[in-house]
Each structure stands twice: as C-alpha cells, then as structure tokens.
Image 1 (spheres, rainbow, N blue to C red):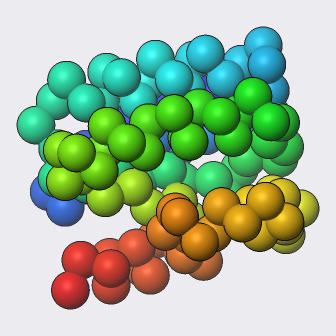
Image 2 (cartoon, rainbow, N blue to C red):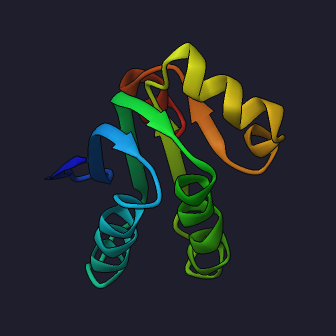
Length: 111
C-alpha cells in the first residue's frame, strides 16, 4: 500500500495505491488520524489506484465516519474501480458515504 498526501485549498487528499487489507489498513487509519490533526475542511480519498479492499479496509473508513461527522468534515471517496465500488454498494456503504466517479465530481460536491 502506497499513500500519497496532497493538500489543496478545498480538501486534504489521500491517494491510495495497491491493496487495502488487514496488513495495510493500519497505514490508512494512521494517515486519516494525521489528517484530522490538521485544520481540514474536507477529506477526500483518491481510490483510482486502489486495486482491492478487504473488510478490514472498509472498517477503517467506517470507524472514522462518526468523528468526521462530529467535526463537520465531509468524507468523499472517488475514482473507485468497478470491483471496489461493487463492494461498497453490496454492503450499502454508498448510502452512508459520499462516493463519486472523479475528482471533478468531488469538487462539485463543494457547491
């Protein structure tokens, strides 16, 4: 798992590359915790290069939803491939998380 961080005026972006499973999800969890220590208005997760996500990986996002909501920080995931998006949809997570096709759509969420 490779994680790149990009800070833009409108959002703090975590770019994920590789597989997010039980052995790598702690890295993403730590990256989200570090993001929350910064003054951020939105947290975006760029999943364009995320090839796989396990239940442990999903649990990382779910575990932070309450904190993000209480801080009024929207979480937006974008660029999910068909396989990863299907996992979110099968579990109904697209109903509680904002998932959009692209970064451009994430920008539109700001309006």
